[in-house]
Image (tube, helix red, strand yellow):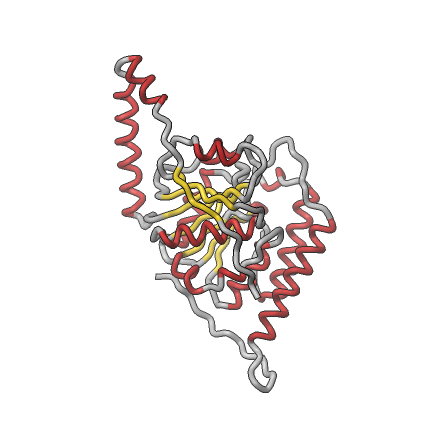
Length: 300
């Protein structure tokens, strides 16, 4: 049974006026900014006409003070809301978000660390409360390329899928993924597909989009709160007959080494198996016969 989530609080980032004041002091520069804002407004209107309306980006963040500003700066202007969920970071992550100048940014602070899955769930809840129709997850470590965002959103925004996952293994730059991570990713995808009757190439990629209609019909309270949530959530989606799609996204790895270890793979595999068994037992009828869920979609 899911435990009640520890308390959290939401604040809105305070716009930084210093840049605008500096531009005015220099004389005439602000005009260029105003023209740029008009161009961005035109882009937003064009995206809405093509179905990209009421898109929210959820940014789970834990101790990412070096990457969080670049992550927020890269989110396109056509995104309506940005919810940063700080999972009780011990560095400057929270203060940097609070000081960010983008008025779309809202900070949700977990008072105790709950895990990445719990952070995403808090973001989903906040986005649904705002009336967002497409709920995107982009991690706060700046490893999800903003130029891929439209590709991730499109199948959900246009009603072709309930849930979209990025797939790093089908992107032309797939070799940038560390070898150990590629091997672990392929194994976990195969294992998840076997247990869930899916056909997913990259089950662990966190770059995702979910329709609000699907989100409201899913037991989000059961979302696994910590490491390993992607496979757990995929099986939940499969059990509810959601339409799942994949799109290529760029793998972003800099000088850091992969943190994936063999015991991580085994832990996730065990977690996915446990979730599969729970879902199977739930589908059993009074006499123990397995009842297959009917295929359905929440796309509009």
